[in-house]
Image (cartoon, rainbow, N blue to C red; front, side):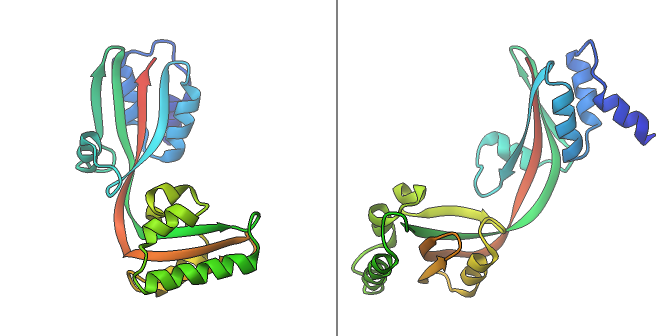
Length: 208
């Protein structure tokens, strides 16, 4: 039975109507099947796999999809036919939240970086400066424009050492951290405690 299901999913078909598009999508239950299906039928439709995070994605579409169970789908009529969103996976994942300043070792010596970090940490401790304002001035990370805020991060985004240090700190604590092998030198502020956040993995397909 499983063989016939796979055959049904991944053999290209000649007539790709709106109705059989939904039938084929209904038979996809895993991310691997979704990827293979997209690759096999790329001449018939545009397909991609996307992830929605309940804290980051607040659109009406995302809200409607989060209300559905795994395997559910939403169909939207378009000028070309239909766009289908099929929920392939749904789970709770640990996230944490920090803001950072990153210092460029290629342009500045380690001694200069450490001196600058001491100045910054002292200014924050004495409440002379705000973290976000200093990040905009001194950080070499792309988030400097937004004051160093990385948003909610999935566990595993950074190294185990980075995440272990963050988990041991209290919310609001600001501290230095070095990744010597990667030649990355940080000031980090823990902004939220870790928590479980719901994420859904979606297969989106639309007719060309």
